[in-house]
Length: 494
Image 1 (cartoon, one colour):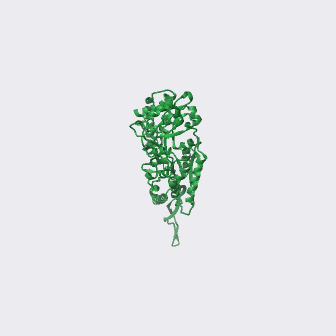
Image 2 (spheres, rainbow, N blue to C red; image 1 turned 90 degrees about the vertical axis):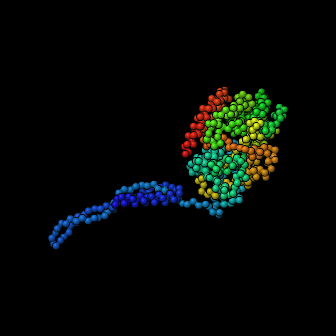
Image 3 (cartoon, one colour; image 1 turned 135 degrees about the horizontal axis):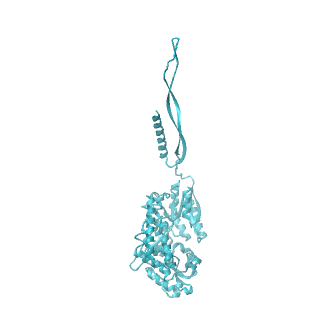
């Protein structure tokens, strides 16, 4: 009997667990389950027979219920079902963005302008905008998501394989249902930046390209012809040498190419005859330690250590990333994001040109990039949130963005409507955005900064600051360690 009751208890608990599992995710709570058994007890009765009293021992079975034990079992209560809001229901979507120190008030206002424009055409969806400093923003988002307080929509830089962490919504079904053809809607980099294993986990906010800005006044004073598309990295170096006159505080190049950024956020990271990281971001061995990569390291390092054509640290500290605005730098690698302040503040004549290619036999590979909009997988009103994302990455929002001149949209259709492919400056960017391109090497793996990024800073310190010219002796063991780090991290995901 005891075994029978235990069996019943087990079945009840199993059915309870199955019902809970069928309801999906829910909140755990503790209940008390009472296990009971039936006990058989023997009792003695006295009976009287024909006036003669006889004690007769008889056995009668009496059944009693006894509580054996109480057991606390943690179960999960089924949550209320989540349903998409109807067309007449008002839904609020939270949108987090960033602002940098050099962003103008117009940059901040653009977020609210976009939110208001969307609300006008979607009156039952309200957009709650929140802006944060760009430094540490990604960590802020991840911390908020872990606490269950993350935004519905945000933009930042994530390597595409961050999708393995599970907090991003797969947008592929929404893109397909909306009839969007990414190859027609966005520039190539917009199609590449958020795709993981053939699935879209984001959509592009904008599209930017790298190129060389040059000071026409300095070129004219030195009697040097302006650089033209098709030039090579050796042409770049020769011109930088001719423009440099340290005694008069004048330098051939500034900022990125004269620093570890040369290997990461510049077109030189593609156009020096080597790639430092595999396309999927999982390999540095066989990439960063090859003879071609070692030569590429030396080319960038020598611009500062040997040729001394780069602006000194003091000048860069004074003018920040855009040391080009000092008027004392002949050329600087910049991106589209840097054009507004140059237009507004440059006190000299300037122009831009496509970045140099590796040699006369090479086709230039464009350095392009994009911020990416993401949707949290925890969003309840997914369709409404997708409608906002679709609008943000589409032509209507793109026209608003283009007219402000703050970002350059990811939508070629908008560029054509604005006449930018024929613009003296933006035509250069247009050509770069339509070239062969790659995802920047620091955005190919979610573990890049844990395992790889420090190598470029360390080799720079050894070579430029400490005078250790043995690049190969430093790089080979550093790459071995970086590969172990990458392997260990990716194995932890399996």
